[in-house]
Length: 127
Image 1 (cartoon, one colour):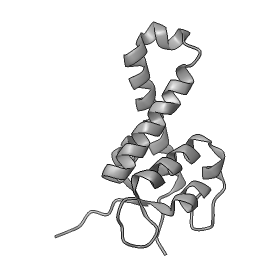
Image 2 (image 1 turned 135 degrees about the vertical axis):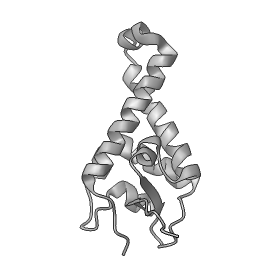
Image 3 (image 1 turned 180 degrees about the vertical axis):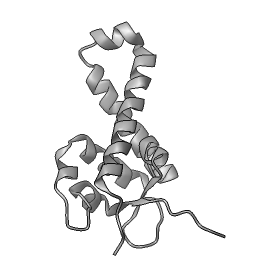
């Protein structure tokens, strides 16, 4: 069985992702545009899903996960990142909020079960 990362660390990673996604939207729309655009929250969500999907598939984790030394890996024990389609499924389910809150005793939420993934702490090799 894979040892998953703590919920506190995952929440921190999500907070980092959300702040970074918000900053991207503010940079694109400008501060005034961001505060006046009724769709600013939707744009932030789309940026979050996009960056989370692409970075999870390519680098093993979203910006927030990478910054907090977490990785999303396949649940098969290989330690390899998940593919783009599973990363998209996982990101959309995280954006829906409820799936991560329904979880198994091993700490994997519905989003991880659907994507057959697990969030783990990056282990530093001592070579």
